[in-house]
Structures are given as structure tokens and as C-alpha cells.
Amino acid sequence: MARGRSDRSSSASTLRLRRSATPVAATELRHALRDWTDSLDVSADHRDAIELACYEALANVACHAYAGRSAGVMALDATYGHTPPGAPRMTVTVSDHGRWRSPTVRPGPSRGRGLRMIRSLSSATDITESDTGTTVRMSWDLSPASAMAG
Image 1 (cartoon, rainbow, N blue to C red):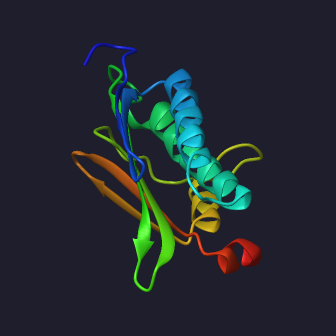
Image 2: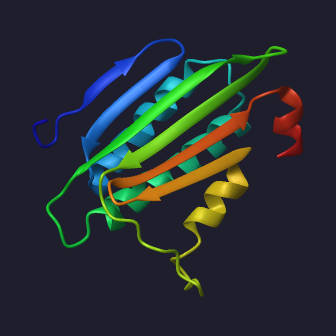
């Protein structure tokens, strides 16, 4: 993939984006995700939580995954659908092929709280780290009751 280009594939129920792992690209992916969620039947509270959690995951890739190495790729894959018994649900996966950086034990005033924030903003979060990269999978129960509880 050429640096700076985005492979984009989307439909009403899926969004797939690939970009170079840079802070500028993380912001562009955040905006693309927001545009996609705006086109769906998702409450404003859920859209805000999804955008913020996903941007934090993307920023972590841009800042940490490829530190000390040539820039790599970050991926954002999102699905929207209804699971039995019909409640809407969204799952977003942010992944890279870089190195995992363990979270800071004692967060500073402006760093080290990202994973905690991601977990608090999503209904469920699963983080998989390996020698071949990191995958952060976040999901949201989009039922009206969950928006009021959030």
C-alpha cells in the first residue's frame, strides 16, 4: 500500500479502513468512522463513545506500535448489526503489526489512561497482543436502554 493512501471498503453494515500509522491518519480514520456512524441508526451518546474509544486505540497505534521502526499500517474494521433478540450492536477492531507497549503502572497527568478509557466507553473490550501485532476489539450494545445507562 502506498504511504498516505487509504484502502476503504464500506457498506451499510461494515466499514474497513487501512492507513499508515500516523497521527494525521488516526484523525482521518476517526472522521471516517464518525461519518459512517452518522449514517446509521446510532444515538449521539453511542456515536461519541465509539468515536472517542476508537480514536484512543488508533492514537495508541500511531504513537506506540511502530516506535523505533519504519511506519507500519493500522487497520480499523467495524460491523453494525442486530443480534438476537434483535438488539443493535457495533463491533470495532483496531489492529496493527507493531509491538505491544505495556501500559504505564502509574499514569501521568496526560498519558497512560487510554486503555482504561477505552474499557469504560465500550460495552466490552478485548485486547490481544502477540509478536505479530496488537488487536483491540471493542463492542457496544446500542439498545436505547444502554445509552441512558452510559
